[in-house]
Image (cartoon, rainbow, N blue to C red; front, side, top):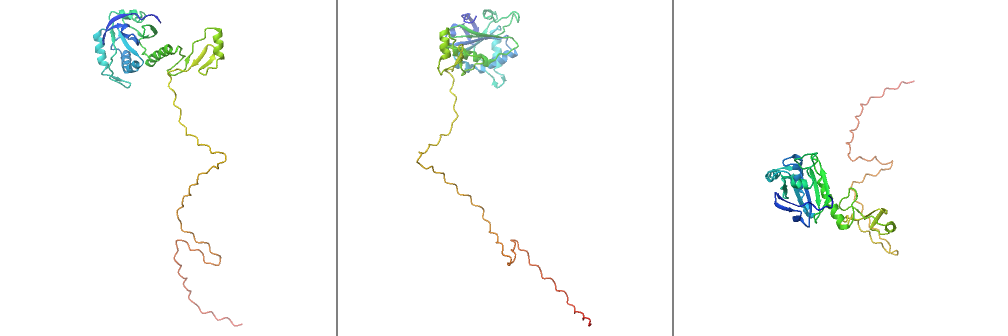
Length: 291
């Protein structure tokens, strides 16, 4: 079904009747189905889609949901979602249309009903439809697996980049990464590709060459201090004046050591003079023995 015209239909939705894909001419559309209202995985998906609607609109992309439930079931469920918060998503309002498909007519046209899974519920299908109403990509998920919304957004970005720049995108490509240049169609152009000195193309071989994504944002260069202008050779380079040495805290000069004949230096904390030793009582000398 890729590159086929998207099957046309008219349907009632939570935003009124739509004529699909005619009403969306000139826009990209993500048409997706979910198994049923009031189910846990689907609730987290709708909360996430609702929180990202402005991001998709900035990419000229509209969202359209579908399940085989009635319009009143859809309305009741979306009102309940608006009272819930999860993973930083607070009480989101679902403003994109959700198709009522009780008859399963639309689901069958798009292969959303997989009999080996369920004959009464749609699987998690995603269809990427371009501005001229062509199906450009499809992703199917089982009922137990919640969708990766970063991948859904990446697919839209990759398809738009391929159309705008006539290129392909490599594995794990993200917006801003290098893109793949179309493969040469002859031996002559293959030789030219390998021998080309075009700085804008990086070739690993004749069949694998890359170029920059035109929409890539330039990386901000880290600022560097400008180099000082060099002085002419005959101009002496002036050295910056040395900063004056910090003054040391003043201390009283120590007493100089006195020569040996002088009295010992008195310590800062003078000790009191020692009292004179008491005189011993004198005794008369004994008379020396006369020889």
